[in-house]
Length: 351
Image (cartoon, rainbow, N blue to C red; front, side, top):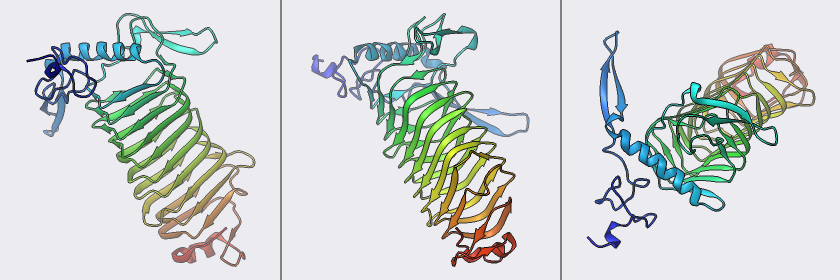
């Protein structure tokens, strides 16, 4: 075999011991279908659970992440992960994380004992350059926890076969999922702060769960499917949910809204359950709901929403609960009661 035949047809580097000669791909770009086995586990209730066992490829996985770190060190500005098949992310051991301060006072995390994922032993878990994941496949659970992202992170036309977990991270610029990216579940939890989170033209088969002390802007627009959106115990300046094809449940609970919530133009999509419960709307903030269809609609036990609510060109098919003091008006801008609004559920136009 000549040297050209030993080169990866994606990056042009040597395929090496852990790559795939038949695919003509190196360890980063080969598909890794033979790195894991799907096994069945019988639980106490006699139900069968399928899980993925990566144990036979432990050395491959160590070498993969070594090559990822080498690849990052070679990049001069933007770090673009292109057509990379990621195996499982090794579990982070909290006992091996040392919390420290950078020179500018920014809190960070340092892995003290082992190399792990994108970082060498003892180095801060920081992406200090823009990062882009294009046409990538994540074959195991993707864990982007305990990381500071100084610049934008774009994830486009990529596939996540398992869940994405983001705990205790900071995105100082933008986290952007787009361009036909496919996800199973996205969880943003436990002290994660994001300047801007945008989901556009993606498919999310299960839940988007957000629990964040700070999101400046959340945009969910033009998506193919998001099963459930659950935003709990968060603080968000602006929420825009617009022109999505399929959302089953949309729930905001115990969340502080500093500026606005705008939910609009999803008339082809009937949202089964819509709830805003126990939220706080800061002074001068507002909520606009326009050209929507709901089966069940609840806005209850919220603080400071009475002067901030606008519902327009929206249909509610089954049940409405509005247990707050708000001035409702009909299409002629005549003031009506919640009881009268319920009687107009089929053609409710209030603002």
